Image 1: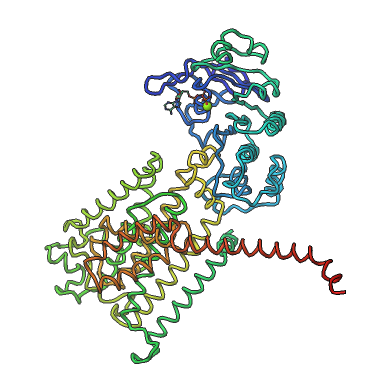
Image 2: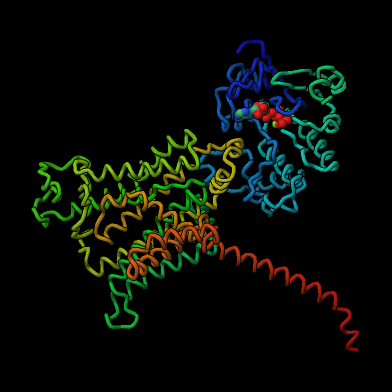
Length: 250
Length: 390
Ligand SMILES: Nc1ncnc2c1ncn2[C@@H]1O[C@H](COP(=O)(O)OP(=O)(O)OP(=O)(O)O)[C@@H](O)[C@H]1O
Ligand SMILES: [Mg+2]
């Protein structure tokens, strides 16, 4: 808790974690500023998802520091705490609640009190209703509000999950491969949506789709073997010989 | 707050089920008490008690459904909470015996005199008062479930491991209650009850009242569980059943949610046990047998887990079947039960009620589609018809 992490929203320093001796993250350092949209690329197994696991409390680092909003030590908190602090996460494979309707998925995600009794006696207020309707139209699922999430197409599930993140109103959004399995049109729309979302919060997007990354037009970090290989504009990073050797050239 | 909770809990099936239970609570006692024994509609007292017993089993299955059907916690120890509630009631009934026991001791139950105990153990204090015993009927199972769940859910014990430790819990209680020095009557348990709230436990009127109380307890529990599962909390429970870690990442304390459901469920099981004991006249450690808890799972599966009505139907069907079957072929009952479980798992994974609901829903959707098609055809033919008529 010193002056070395001034006002950055997310601050990772020297984070390492290994699974059965295999180093998934190796002294990873990484900073996200408030309001920033950041893209992360890197080969399979580079540790991108593991990094998100560390930030959201799913995995504890073996060593290193992870701070949120300057002085909140995330390594001391669990998933629910971290979510309530304002870090939302979209998973690599779409994970929505399949036996709930689209509407209920959003209602559950809504940023309201989450205690046992607060949820037991919760009543949908006009305000909450309006908010859910607004999100439904943002993610274009208004017509399917009463359908079970299980019956959505793959792309629609991805969008519903993005809608759930919006409902959570996080300060920092971690998005793991949002356009995997989407059509080109859906991919382009998702880029627009993410840029829109990033206007009011910080977003970190992991993606393999270079066209999509180019569409976003933001600072890019390339990970490989658990640490940062290169960082900068997309043109800078994609011309880096190490990046070409480790990732793009493969 | 409470009223909106109750209003929300009442959908059509629940209203119908509650109404049926209310009618039964009046009708069965009336047919037993007000008709002559040779009247065609007369319900003999032994049947009143048998049906009353089924209703307590139904309540136990409903309690299990709350945790298994809606939170995915397959408890294989729910009969333990039932038995604990039963013992609390049994202790009250023992203390009502007073000087009418074989040894005529005003304070000590017979088995304590037999063991040469000189004074009443501290944990028997208060059980001479009905209100205290009634409180213990819910508090003891609730407390044990809370402590057990606190450790299990915090350490994120899930799935098969959780099921195994619930079996271990009921087995440990079985062994403990078998011991004479535990002070609960050991092997023989508690029996030879005389009266409850001053009424003879053998009297037709008492039996009828116990039946009515069981029906009302089941109806009330149905309203409460329905209120829980239809609230936002209920949606969180289903969410964590299907995707636990996703629910955590939305900021919900999954372990607290589970703990709440598990504790409420154990309390309901305790009430079921308390109503069971006076109707069968005995409670002994056999009620803690691991097999008993597994039977509850079978009733729930047969009726349909996650449907609320299903476990009630399942408990009554299977136990009704058991009563008939064991009279005819006593040695084959366990095989029949096992076979039934396998068949239901393979061919009716949603259980009797779940499958029926599915068929009904499909029928409704088909009819709706057919109606829409008819309408389209009619409007399509509309303008052509008058022309043809001319
Ligand atoms: N819980 C775990 N237990 C064991 N190994 C793990 C665990 N989580 C991740 N790993 C390993 O750590 C390495 C990094 O995995 P990670 O999922 O972070 O990669 P990634 O960069 O997200 O790759 P992809 O692009 O394929 O999604 C992989 O080799 C993976 O097998
Ligand atoms: Mg990944």
